[in-house]
Structures are given as C-alpha cells and as structure tokens.
Image (tube, rainbow over all chains, first blue to last red):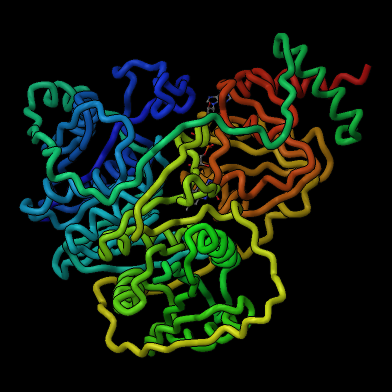
Length: 261
Length: 324
Ligand SMILES: Cc1cc2nc3c(=O)[nH]c(=O)nc-3n(C[C@H](O)[C@H](O)[C@H](O)COP(=O)(O)OP(=O)(O)OC[C@H]3O[C@@H](n4cnc5c(N)ncnc54)[C@H](O)[C@@H]3O)c2cc1C
C-alpha cells in the first residue's frame, strides 16, 4: 500500500476582477466562492497522484487543504476526481497568510498520518511564490524535489523517480527515498474532470475537519504592510471601439512603423 | 556587532550564474541599508576555484564549502553544507537568486535555520532604517510591501536587480571549510539537454506569443496564421503551454526559456507574470490582447487591446489582407 497526499488550495479565475480594499493591506475579489477551483498546478498534482493510483494497485490518494470554508468546494472536486479521503484544516478569513504558516499547519496535520508521498502544486495562483511544498517537507524532515514534470514510484524499493526541467533547457532525472515530497509543474495527461458517479459519491462523503490552532502559528512570517497597483513600464495606449475597428487601427500603426507590409 | 548578509552562489561548470550576480547586487544594497558586512557562500567540489574568481571580481569575502565529489547541485546536500557553514557565519540575511535551483534550495533552508522567507523580491526600499521588500502578488496585478525580521532568507526575482561590474580596491579573500559525506536521500540519475534544435526564435523580428488564455491547442493555428502576415516571424508561448506539450520548449519565452527582443511582440492571452516578462522585456514594440483590462501584461505594452484573442486575431488577419 502506498499512501499519497495531495495539498490543494482554491484559486480565483485569472481574469476575476481584483481591487485593493480600504485598509490598503488586502484585496477584495469580484468573484463568488462558488467559482473557486483548485489552482492549475494543484490540479496537475491531483492528476499526477491519480495516474499513479490508476497504474499501480494498492495506491490510496488523499487531498488536504488549509484555508477558510471555501476550500470545501475544492476538496469535493478532488474527491470527484477520484481521491479517497479529504482533510480540511479550517482557518478563518485571515487575509494575507505567510507561506511558512501554511507549511507549518500542513505539516502539523500530516505528521502523524504516515504518508509515503506528498505532492503539492509548483505554486499557488495568488501568491505565486512556489515555497509551501519545500517548507512542508522540511518541517516533516522529508527529502523534496521541486518543479517535477513526471513522477513514478517503485513501491518495492520505496523510491520516487522524477523528471524536472531546470534553467539552460536541461532535463534532470532524479530519485529519492520515501517518504518524500514533490512539487508538480506538469503532468503528461491534462487534469481529469470529476466523473458524475464520483461527484455523487463525494457529496455524501465526510470531509475530516481540523481546526487550525491559532496558537501554533509559526511566527517567522513576513508582514505585508501595504498593497499598491503596479506602475506602467510602458505607456500603453488602449485601442477603442469594436474589434474590427481596433484591428484596422493596429494594421495602420504597424504599417506606419514598417513592421507590416 | 555588524549584521551579516550572505549570498548563496549558483554555479555550473565553474561559472557563476548571472542571476546570482543580480542577487549579489541586491545584497550589496541591503548591506548598505542594514549596516551589514557581506559575503558569498559557494558549495561544491569546485567551490574553491569559484570562490577565488568571485572574491577577485566582487572584492568581498567568499566562503568556500568544499564537498569532494559534489559535482552538481543537490538540494539536500547543499542545505546540509550550508547549515554547517552558517553555524559559524550566522548570517542575518541570506540572499538567493529565484531560479528553479534557488527556489528548490532556499525555502527549506529557511525552515532549517529557523528563519523567515520571502520569495520573488523585485524591489527594495527603506523605511525607518529598515529594509522594505516589494514583490508582485496575484500574477502581477498588485504589489505588496513586506517587512521581515532577520534572520530571513530573501529570494530575488531574476531580471529585477542590475549587476554592474565595478572596479574596487578591496582584495576580497577566501575562507575554506571542508565537509565529507553529504546525505544521499535524493540522487541525480542523469541530465540531458531538452532541445538542441534551434527554433529560430532569436532571429524572428515578429513574435506572436500564446498564453493560457488561448484555451485550446487548436487555436495555435490562428496564431500561426497571424504570424504568416509578417516576414521573419514565429509563434512562441508562455511556460504552461510548453509544459502541456502544445509547443516545444524551444519556443518558450521567459526566465526558464528564451530571452527575446523582436521588433514586435504580440502577447495573446498572456497575463504577464514576472517570469514571463523576464524573457520579453527587451522587445521594441509590444501589443497585448487580453480580455482582462487589468492584466499586468498591459503595463509592459505599447498597444493594449481588451478583447477575446480569437475575435480580434480574425479581424486583424482580415484587415492586414485588405490592401485597398
Ligand atoms: C521558477 C519559475 C520559472 C518560470 N519560468 C517561466 C518562463 O520562462 N516563461 C513563462 O511564461 N512562465 C514561467 N513561469 C510561470 C509564470 O510564473 C506564470 O505562471 C506563467 O507565465 C503564466 O502563463 P500565462 O500568462 O500563459 O497564463 P495565465 O497567468 O493563466 O494568464 C492567462 C491570461 O489569459 C487571459 N485570457 C483568458 N481568456 C482570454 C481570451 N479569450 N482572450 C484573451 N485573453 C484571455 C486572462 O485574462 C489571463 O490574463 C515560471 C515560474 C517559476 C516559478
């Protein structure tokens, strides 16, 4: 039996409107929680884990999320995709949460559960840092490999084999001893859609809820003091009007610059 | 007592990565703000050779952590070596370049040395004699100012800080630590080059670039058709498209792909994440098509078109064919 755990988090659609709130220190998003879906890389991590479950008998895949109630939707989706169990570390609406706090909470919940392989997405869609996975591994004292584009396991030898791409257009093949953590950048198959039968099953499945203990929060975190909108590096001119009009205006601009013949 | 700033050096075949030199430039600024002394830490079998080069070039102290047989980057071995070295050095600030390797290495290191960690630092300012770090959030739609207590690991966004070779009169010197038997829970089996073939991207004077906003692989045909309106043109794309196998890796633009500077760069359905911008900032003229008027790619564009890329490109192709 190989126990795999996938860490997931909800994200807003890339084009959902976003404004800095009155306090100037956090944002408000113009999207409802019902639109929340797992982040792109988290979905790829789920797909990667479920592929292993399809390929090897005796693989169990669980999903875990740390965040407010909206995370339940993402966990249900993970169950709908084929995960066996879901764990929710419930927090309040906390605004900005340092990555180290999330990693600490995840590792506290994971420690006693003896998973052989933990997968996380390469990075979240909102913070775009790509650091929670590595920190979680470190808190758990596990080896960790990042930016993986393919993952396989050798259950007998208790090895995780990965491929990853690094700068300079190079691809590496690596292996590590289980238990281990890998962060997922890509998967050979696109994330599967939840199946109807699994969605129906997921609705009745219980999601284990753990209250995030505010006292245990790691205090090394960074403090966000202010949010601002980015400054323009180039003075963009927005073309106006219907698409056809903008298209012919662009054609004239490019002809006048001799870029287009 | 002085504060200490340490720069962790990324190197390959005895050469220091350009992103590390940017991180060193950042570290020098940080040292000024915090009144710190700065040193570079080099781990590896060939650490000594690189340390001498770097000490000479930067005029600062270099700590060579020599681990015989460690001929390539190994996150676990590097963290183990750095923790040993930091036992004596005790840096308040640790600076690392935010490359794939830097991100792999540094965040676990932060946990291990009980430090905080801030990734993708793009700017630094000063308030009440304390450094304030800025980075983009939400794929570049907003910027956040952060303060963090030392000890802290700071990961710099490649392309955000400028290194310029300065003449200096400090000699810089090298200190050496020898370590044996690194841990071996992760092992490199092989390394290969992904693409030897030249995609011709660097010679293209017009690049039509696709992002995740193009929705399906089939839509690349429309971009190819648009590229066909120009001479010496090519399609290219953001990393997620290459990861999904829609485009070969040699057509990826950005930090881990190609750096391009064509006469015209057309970004279709690309949000404008820092890692993408790092590869196309040098373009002479940038046109962006995006349904989201607040997409950060518009901050880097000369012409902005808020529209569905498919509708617009079809109209554009038609207008470009019309010579009347
Ligand atoms: C270490 C590291 C290195 C990286 N290196 C690179 C790199 O080299 N190159 C790179 O590109 N990325 C790189 N990345 C990834 C990068 O951070 C971003 O995730 C990526 O660039 C986002 O790609 P995108 O803009 O295509 O997708 P998204 O961010 O999802 O943006 C899609 C955009 O499409 C728009 N859109 C949606 N529908 C439409 C429509 N119908 N018409 C028009 N527009 C539409 C949306 O509004 C949105 O702005 C790296 C990340 C890390 C951590």
